[in-house]
Length: 479
Image 1 (tube, rainbow, N blue to C red):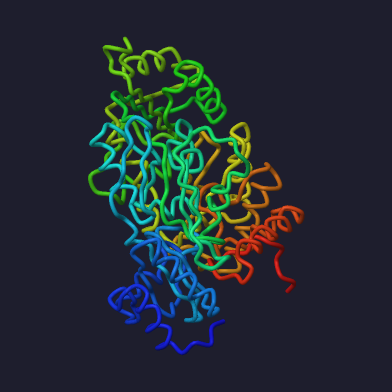
Image 2 (image 1 turned 30 degrees about the horizontal axis):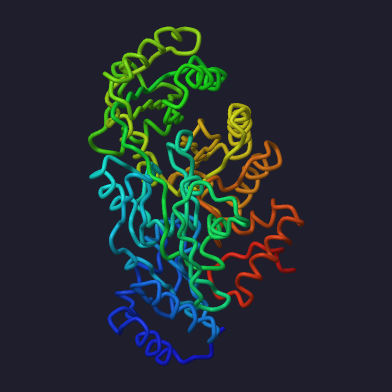
């Protein structure tokens, strides 16, 4: 912990980045201290460097003086890794000013971007060249934050996560303090030793601060087909996925599951949405399927919407009981509005989990039975990425429920769900949200001791004094 007086800390950091980029007034710091879902702390101050050189200077100063530093992008994370604790001793370093020009290399199909560039701004620029960065999310994070959490999204089945689309990066190291590591390669093939950039992917802002990146980008689709499909039953979901992959291959871009409760929640609470199956009622479960191609209908010789319609007609009664096809926007609005809608119905208890695709049906069946047996007053609004085994197994404790909300019961629920996911089905307690103070205890619960020990040695080598971030990937300290 730093022994520097607060005023001295403010003065010294202001000398590095400019007085207007150091915030101490609560009116200015509040938005950096409150997480999107979790994280409600108090920062010593907020500093906003505007270049890699200024990031290096801030990291060097804080590391040398023992000031804990929390890197932050757009603050859209969901595990509290980018917000300070309640001590008032941690400095939040916002990277939102690390923007600059987005450099697009059309021939190499890459984009070089600052860590503070948002996903929306990147895609607006790429669209000018017929390209996109196809990590589809419900938020608008910065590229640096996406690297730190290795975001995936709804189209991972086709394009992969951030890790699969990251070619190079620039990072400021915690040790030696402030040293800039240049890994800004735009190569797709480079087999020359350790792939060091991977040390900074999905590790929650520990060890180093990403300041720039080289991303692989993709052509914009020229035709898209979307359908909301009612399967004949839970057992048909994976058979339908296999059939779609066999029929359409890489044209299959998304395969998303939406429960009846989740869809009804959107219809009840989000203006401008309507039941796509009307006059039929909302089905017990539906699948949002998207096909896309960068080839035109004329060149491909296939209209994807018609091809999907023909495919579904062949599956009626065996795998499909109903389907709605359209251009996609309205159906995706339902999918993207689920999280917003369920927050209005009580206390949200969110689970971001993954199991092998082949275990999704069995997991959901067992988890539903467990909820009905042990927590019957809770309501499940599950949805997610059947194509990659991911599931947002979101549960609401209704405001009017009996018993009243109780934190100890929520902890028992979390342990029960995660034990089933990890120990029962070999899954992950954090499919794409990463690890932060909110769920770090589960990392230590489920990660093997040899893995924790090795990860701790790596983290200690990268950051021997624990200068950066809020997560410890080594063995948990003894109680």
